[in-house]
Length: 362
Image (cartoon, rainbow, N blue to C red; front, side, top):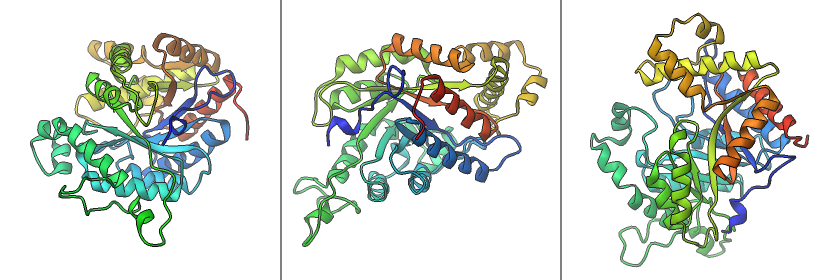
């Protein structure tokens, strides 16, 4: 594996590669089927316009987010795309046995050779009760604290190199390297590169120490972005994967033909987040519902604070906002995520951003 499978190439006038983070959002009046069809349309649009990679995030027990099974969704997207990198942003490793993750992403790599990323997080991607149901334990802190050991175990399964005497020495993740060492076997030249995801300093430090690429969740933890990126760079040790740090940040952004329409859409997204944060998760509301909603003073303050970190407006305004964010953070790649009840609004946003940067039309 080389850094070439990690580093992207900027398109048009963009300062760095732009990518897509898809939460497979389900809006009011729409179904999960509608949302997944939007994901297919968005992945093909992203590929045709020059976005570098397309990631799907793992979430659970949220009616407005239909991305509980990233590996299943990625297999579907792999069948509809040809060049764009596909990956998880991320798989929440404590929710799964490392062997299962290695098997799933080995299968994806066999489906789309050289195009698969394995982004890993240590948060549950849900509430505590749902996490307990996923992990079959109520000792959740213990699972999170065990993340480095789970990560090392996963890497051994992906590389099929447990040492002699290890209990898993004769356990193999298939598809995987063991097939290349079997009589008549041919070894695939690709293995999904691992990314560590985070919204605090833990994964930043761990990614730096292991020489892995680091993706930070700026879209919901903007106050920690620069400290986490600086810590990652300071902690970085060259590895077989990377000879220099590589950072990606998730960015909430939405472009519309008119600024007022963009403002209406992000208001609806903020209302959806208020409901999630207060234990009332639901489908993403329409802009009309958000405009009619009576926000309390505390909720209004949350909306203003939340939307201050969203890049939205006309295509030129969004381009300027993304350029400023890149300049301020020094991120090597920007991964754009958008929340809107309508798939058409999301598709139009990514099209407008590509146009604003003069991306090619393939």
